[in-house]
Image 1 (cartoon, rainbow, N blue to C red):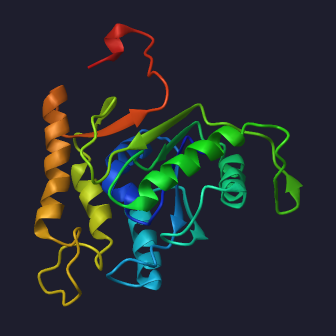
Image 2: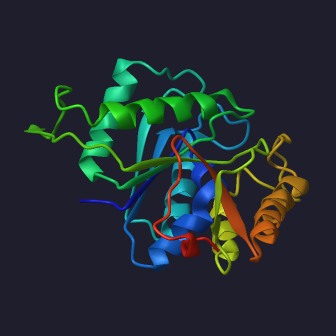
Length: 238
């Protein structure tokens, strides 16, 4: 199965919090989109790996993604080494995405920057023919995504480009709130965390509105690039 976009997150909910508006819009436009979670988020203060598994499934259904997989890397302790790279390469070659979206290059959680570099390196290595991988006994062809973009997470990084997600913020928020053990719930007795406050939930809407304001639309999501972003015509810029 070939995908147009593969969105990769170190933890379940990274993708929903950061780029799900973009995904929802592209899905609505007929693109095939998948999500790959590197870990099960088992070190999270609230909830369990099992509840997170179900929440990730629910969020995927809300967004309408074609496929969602989890590599089961160790939350907090995965490394950017050969074994982890090969596991990601196998997925990249399996789905052959044109675009990969992945974690912020620098962020509060150590897994975000680490995951960002791991995915970026794996995307490059996946295009090398002499690295051999197989899936269900069949040798895989080399594949390198055309573009790797990094979404913005906790830190307010300056985006290199932004995507208009006007009309898709409610879908984004619905997918985020599928992680009901993680985010704001006035009745929850679970320990408080930096992402469980009402303020954090409001900040998601605010950031989308602020990025939208800057480009003259209602809502937007921002990304950073590894290489220059190019357009065919200057009129492609809104």
